[in-house]
Length: 337
Length: 192
Image (cartoon, rainbow over all chains, first blue to last red; front, side, top):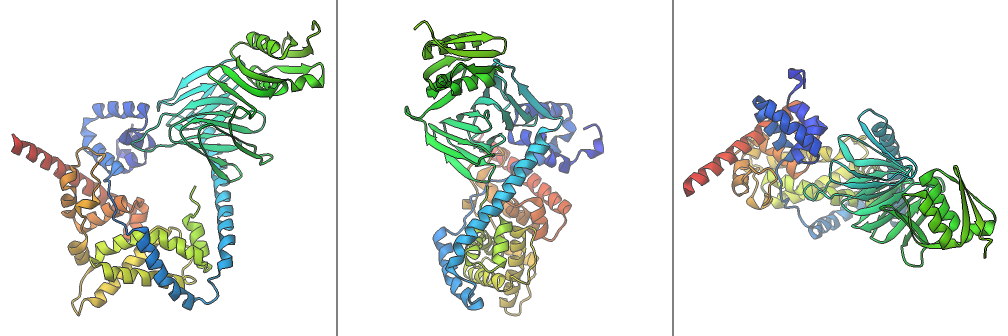
């Protein structure tokens, strides 16, 4: 705002930060613009005009209802047949739908790769990164809580914390903004999660992305263009490499591994899966004395902040001996038995 | 993700797909219907004209090239054909577009949402205030917030440049704001 002649209505309407202020979307922007207005009272009229244009008037459109539209359509369809004999063919209906999906898939893929490039490789990006074994609690400027597990990373553009990129593992408690229906997005290498306000868990380790929904409802958009909706208590995993989708309800019978607020919860998960979670979180390498040790099932919660406690708990649960030296962990059978 | 993006719709519409025709019809008929009635103030005539418009659009689809902005294109072509039709029906009395908008283009109280986000817009009299605006200001407000168009869409529909649309929009919103404030102040003074 240093150059005075650059400051006009158009500038304000196109300024993302100003739009956030006018719509009450972002606390930082609101603070900035409130201060700015206090310092520049001579511009108050222009600012108010711009705000009014952005928010606008809410209408209650009196459109004709669906029945009326269908009637009108039925009335003119016969006229079209006369005009184009042979063009109206029922067989064509299905291929059309498929091609439309294909086309939109291409558009979505393009958009995703574009956002990936342009949004996260620039200077306005905020990055939060955790070391091995470190867990951080984050409060984003829009009120959303993120718990970031060890060896993980989120990044987002400063003016839009509701679109973020995740590598690793995190738990989200998204603050909903009912007045504007502002959405929240999490992007990973495999998919996009679209949320209104909810609690869910995302894990991108192991070359796929796993999403578990606790509360609310979310949309997933896989990078191959497919979309799906999730309801609470469901687990979806997808990998862009294999295009394999798993969509199921989390029940007592389904094996799953979840991390939430400092605890790993396992349900009939083989030891090798449990250990690979630890490999990612702590950056260690796990070796097994024999193949059959890998398959020992584990159930229950294991504290995650401290590797020593974690190993002790696993030793007890699986009745094995675990030797920890440097960055390597060796799992042996318990010879005392 | 919108399954029926305008681009794909238009592509298949031009190929003569009946399902694309149906989707396009259902998507734009309601909006064009209301817009047409605002211009003509004659529901039956508007309906006939709009249905003919869709038939003609289909018949002449090959003549129309690739269209960058389908929504604006439909609004502007329908507006033209409706006004042409209206002029024909006005028995020998020539009528200009501005006159049409001046006499017909009104917003009713039911069309205003009870809850306005800008607190100084007083809902009770908002439709009155909008109706007192100039025809162009009314149309810009209507296209922007009723039909949810972007400023460049509006520029296309009203055959103006972007800057002029923005100026009209600014003037209209400022007028509404100030008039609404004045009315609120008056009503407070009356009470006390």
